Length: 447
Image 1: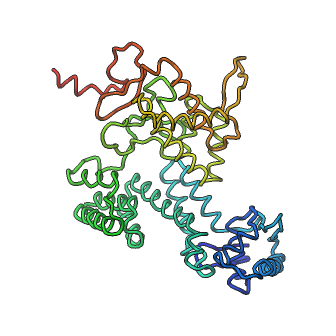
Image 2: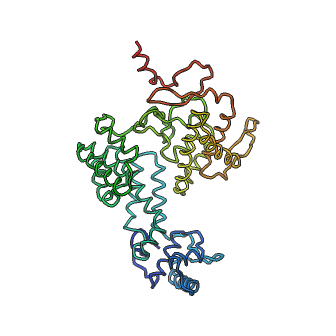
Image 3: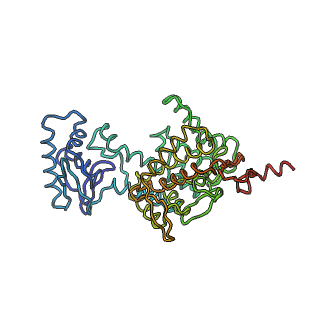
């Protein structure tokens, strides 16, 4: 049985429409249960959603009646609606829910290492989208409450698909595909950046610059803000004709590990490696400069530096595909930790950064276990209970060990404006990091 929630509510069996729920509220109740398939939705929650916080005295009895009717309609198709505690649940089964399939496909796309495979999976996911979720069974306020996350996930998927297409040189397709969506979301800066880049590469520089000017005007009028740093930087690079804009971005100073690009090893310590990106932290970011683009890269990096075991990496990647929202949250937390750790290491007097790092370190300590390795030595390892946060737990422990080590006082940042990588300099004589290109121009210029 197929349940369609991404657009007008519909139920089909073997391709034929099935009438389920004689009332709009009944269909809405079923939609809520399907959005939470496999989980219990409490009766109080259902009442709050169906009557938008203003239920009649008979609301509980009405919900019970609706559930009875739905059970009768769905039972012949093997779709059970179970009573659990003080709530109801539609069990996972052979039935298909387009919202769940959409979320899973977006997660698989984000985890794909090959841009062509990423685009294919994004296309499959976005092909399920028929319109506003629950368009005919819920009002605007309820659609926002129930479908807001799906709508945001769709916009994010379109943005990431466009970036993958740009990486493959498909700028004409991006320029065309994003036009209608930008009409709906004209201040969505990541969409604007993708279309500006596509127009520029298609030889339509004037259109790209007009798009920026229009976006800037709208942001100022509607929100009272300027375009974000990334969009302003893109605009400036177009104005000066940066030749790097004419080609898809490629990783800078990178090595291939499995299906992921990771930064070169430059510092000799995992906590410092975590801070380092392809092009460091100095100046404007270069295309492809941030290695921490997806959860798969985070997991593979942790395995590459032996912070977690390889079999754990595989398990984490599989879990991330099943739970894309949780993987995205873990990745965002890792990025914030990286920023705070870099600030903490480059400025020992930054108390705010140290406290932010300490909070994550203390949490990591609670999520670590002391185990005996095959060599007979004991070592701290992140506990499986950390879930998708496990790579962050591992690097936080490494950061704590460095911050408690006198070597922490030998941490240096490469002074090159195009680098900024951190490294250990116990000799006190080293000026540049291990990238051969960092000091080359400075040295040749001195001659």
